[in-house]
Length: 104
Image (cartoon, rainbow, N blue to C red; front, side, top):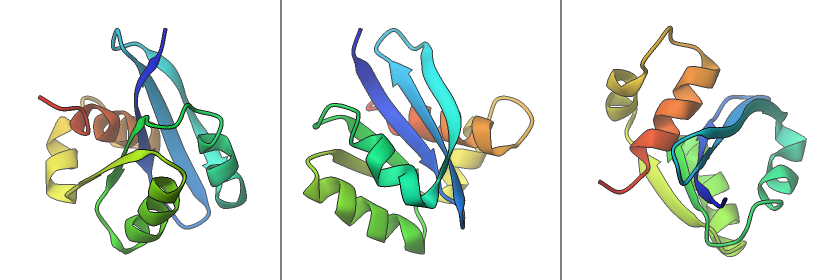
């Protein structure tokens, strides 16, 4: 199975990263420290869609990921909040960002 999209909930020091497979199941949804984020994402195949909530930090990470060969989607915060299906926390936010980054 191949990865359909990766969603990242950005924070100051610990990020939540969610990876969805093509069938819609969650490959993994875990916390990643800032120092390890780029190394963790480079383990995924280049060309993978990476979605992030639109904020000041997303531009930095977006440039880094685009330079590494990934596709990037930035989602406005007001579009992420309604897609959170359960209690609002970092894991559910990353899943909603991942779902929101997929083309309709």
